[in-house]
Amino acid sequence: MAAVTLRSAQWYSGDVRNAYIHRAWMRRGVPDDAFGRPQIAIANTASDLVPCNRHLSEVAAAVRDGVHAAGGTPLELPVLGLGETQVRPTAMLWRNLAAMQMEEMFRANPVDGLVLLGGCDKTIPSLLMAAASVDLPAVVVPGGPMLTGTFRGVPLGCGTDVFRLSEEVRAGTLSAEEFTRSESAMIRSRGHCNTMGTASTMALVAEALGTVVPGVAGTPAADSRLLEAAHGTGRLVVEMVAADRRPSTFLTEGSFANAIVALAAIGGSTNAVVHLLAIAGRLGIDLTLDDFDRIGSGVPVLVDLLPAGRFLMEDLHRAGGLLAVLAQVRDLLDPTAITVTGRPLVDTLDDAPIWDPQVIRPRGEPLVEHGGIAVLRGNLAPSGAVVKPAAASPHLMRHRGRAVVFDSIEDLHARLDDPDLDVDADSVLVLRGCGPKGYPGMPEVSNMPLPRKLLEQGVRDMVRVCDGRMSGTAYGTVVLHVAPEAAAGGPLALVRTGDVVTLDVAARRIDVEVPDDELARRRPSEATVAAFADPRRGWERLYVDHVLQADTGADLDFLVGSSGSAVSRESH
Image 1 (cartoon, rainbow, N blue to C red):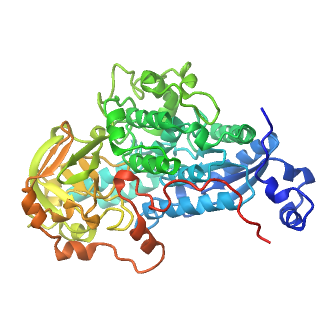
Image 2 (image 1 turned 90 degrees about the vertical axis):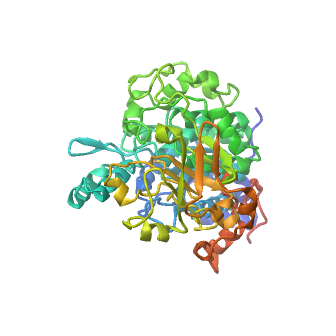
Image 3 (image 1 turned 135 degrees about the horizontal axis):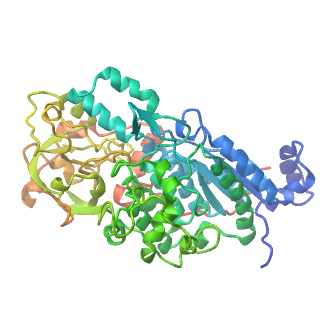
């Protein structure tokens, strides 16, 4: 194989003034030959304000050692990190900004390869979107889930049990004092959520996609084997540069098909749908919402993990991890799709046993027989909506009920617990104005709390419909990502309290029983329109003007596709 000309040589080679400038300011004690080696950027999303990613600087140090050992020059590059639990109005508002910042910094700097460190929900998606657009050799090291915490002798699922326990407080079955006591037990160690939330899902899906060294995703953050894997990844990226193994050379339609199979088999977060669509859009791969249903809906859920099951990510790791899961559905995987190693994903599954069949179910004994993401359409969601059957109540998968409509999240909070609210267990809660444009940013509010008076009656699930998202740690019969959203002219803006909504997951339908001509005559109420976001400046203005809908990944219209890694004009 012919030697690859290093991209960084366009900065550092030669004896002209500009090469002198580039070398001199980077020298800082490094030897002369450091500039002739592959320059590896370690893109680090660590931040004290991203609690799930705080430990990534330790992971970066292990990557640095691996890069050195393989003959490369490691360069840590802090990039924008987004803490799902901290930023308002929602981390999703800045996923595209993070991806744009990362892409521009990867392209603008003298780097030949990338190691991408992410954990919390939006960090791995934004890193992969950026890497796909700049198309430099790149590999992900997921930061890993936290260890299992316990409260009153019972394991706690990060996120999932927040929703569960908070509803018990509202129902009067758990005291506020006990709820507060559980807080310190919820987050036991470094790492991201230990349920099958979006962070865990995207780490595992990134491995199935081929962007993580097989067997690494899901390693707990506190496990020393994560540092060993990070060191190995540092070595691997130097090899990737030598082989010119870029995302465009190994990410194919088959790679995304494998990711969808994995998403279904692990019972993963619905948020992976918008992220995978956005990543595919950067690569020019024609992935659609219907592909998730076509490829994934018949795949069995094999992982018995909260919120769909019982166990947590530490259990999945000891039970055999993702590779043991994929080995059970090997016949559904594309055998031609390769990974960052240059070898097919399926070749890693020959020795991937299940060590605990309670956590990872054998193919013949699934947790849910057909548990993949279901894509719904109808006059309420002409461009599609999604529901996660594995996290829903079976008795509500076919349902008909009166709509109780909320025009905004503030309207919901103001009226939900009103004892005079005209709602019963058969009602369908409808929340609008929560899509990409409307909020802005498509927040995780679709799994609406239930009315207090129904909680006190023992009700624990209802059909809910929203143009926003829900946390991957959440559960319930929730129809989300409704497209077009209300703020983009979608029919969700026209639904009125008292209209009858019908859900039929088996038929893939979500409809409101209002004649087409009447819907056409209706106009959004003043309260609905007044609640839509209307930013005047800055990123929010740019975002609202250019964001696409959920059914295509909610990227910005001018960021779809790639600009490559071409080196621009000289800086001096």
